[in-house]
Structures are given as C-alpha cells and as structure tokens.
Length: 116
Image (cartoon, rainbow, N blue to C red; front, top):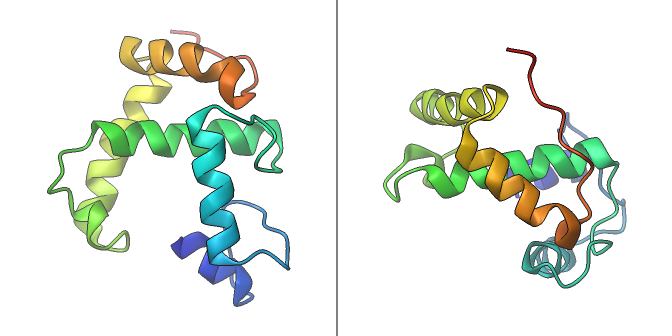
C-alpha cells in the first residue's frame, strides 16, 4: 500500500491507480484478483499485472521475519527483495510454475522467458 499512498499524494509510483480509488477499495479488489475469482478485478496493463504477480511471488518466498514485512524502505528489504526478483529473471522453476498456474485465473500475459 506504500506505492498507492505515494501515488495518491502526488509522488512517484510503480503501478497506476484510479484517482478515486481508496485503500479499502484497492485492498478488496486485490483480494478478489489474487483469489483468482475475477481476472478483471484490477484494471492494469498486462505488464503491470505481471510485475504485481512478481512482487507477490517474491514476498511469498521470503521468510516471515523478512525486513520487507516491517518496512519496505529498509535497505535490508532491498537486498532480500532483489534476491527473489533476480530468481524470477533467471527463470527459477518455482516462479515459472507459479506464474503458469496463475496465468488464466489472474489474466496474466504469457510469460517471456530470459534467453539464457
């Protein structure tokens, strides 16, 4: 929600949001989207949905005591998050399996694999 709050305050952001969106409505729509019940619950470009799923997967792989769950601005969070994001880019089989199984329920675009 940090990205959402920054965007609503007029700062830089990663994902696009409707100006009329509230934290409660965004949270409800994200819950619905991540449940797989409604691939159109969030209105984002395909690349944004792909990036959001990437953050979700990385977070799901981190230990519960990761600094990212306390403060995303913590430098230790950056190191933890970067480790998992790099694994996505390197086509970690766990990421590929998770992405492919979530693709239809979440309305994700086809995955572009790295050319290694």
